[in-house]
Image (cartoon, rainbow over all chains, first blue to last red; front, side, top):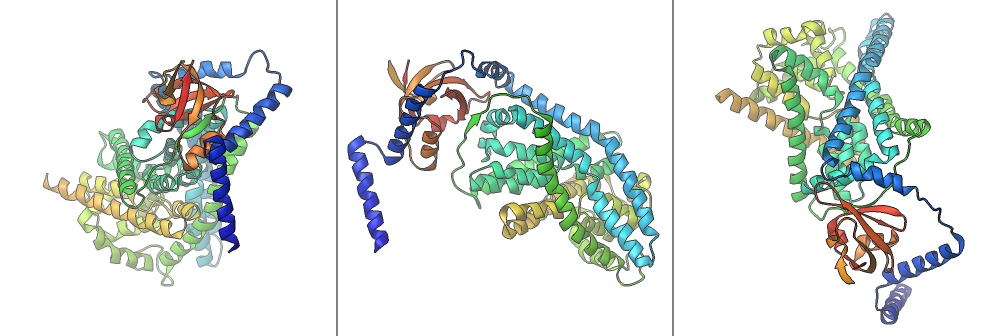
Length: 443
Length: 77
């Protein structure tokens, strides 16, 4: 009964305000609040003769200019990527060397099964993910600089119209850019999108942004099967990823996540000089999440995969006789319509659930060859045509992003959407790979 | 002096907010950000693709879509 009284009293007050002021309560309260604030400011505030905004406004005249805005935006994104891809290889080589050394040390541990768990499983598996620390952290530095100087808000401002067209939001843009480095921070960055449907759509399509881990697979196969057109093939995969993302965004916004999109209403802060400390703090806040994922989810998955590859007892690691090899043989027929129905490939794809660059290492292990020879061996032993190689690259681009990325989806949206994300990406990958192979075979 | 919708104003045009229409969260948000009746507002520009727009009020710059700006009535100076 009391609650009815409260509601009645509320309606009475609302009616009273409406009759007094001719406006709804929200407006009346906001008016009164800002009336009080401006009265107070008149008494206590002296404005400086020159306002800081003027310099900022001059920069904005150029940055969000009608003609310069988009070229400048593309230029800045390109510069950020150049910075990341130019600075990370030497650091990655360093880490690679360190993990190689660590693996050798661990491999010598007895008993032999423990040595194998440490070397093949933990150092090999976790190491293959940690090798991405340099590009990921450098990308975070680049993003933090853009964010702290005030440009990111302008990037959302410039891109909102285009993103809105496909049912996304101006703020969806940054997670998608981050996804090219690594999907984990990309998915996590979706937190800044307020509208739940916009946010979920952006999370679900993020895995189609081709992350750094897919590049080694593309580079290897493009070099082996398309020697004259490597760059074009790899570039086309990035573009196909973006197209699939846009198509899926449109599909989601018209089906599962139907409903009005969020508003775009935000402050464009004045430009500021980023500080070293601020940039490092931002980098660490995001990078830390990646490290935690590598230390927990990936660690667990690594042990499971090692176990499957080493059982039954005494079998050669990841060979046809191992449980992993048997799983590969069981699921290989699923991939036959896409052209790559061999068990070794299926095993490599299961390993790829960990992190996609592991696909390369796993094929190396299965065929027992060095990475440099791998492309040729795949061509000769599996008898792949360039068409099969392309359909396989498409599958690697689109299927289950990696354990850690699905873990990030779970963290942002819950188990249900994480499961959905894992299944639908794999289904899309299979459909696209089969279509490309079947249609390509007819030509 | 004429009353127009904020979304109709061009870059450089100034005015005073007369009324903010609308309902729900976004209406509340607009008011919370200080866009109340009597506030001076100036359109700074429009994004390269024609939407959203950038306005300045109360000493800061705000970006909003034309869709939302259409709910704000401004007396043009």
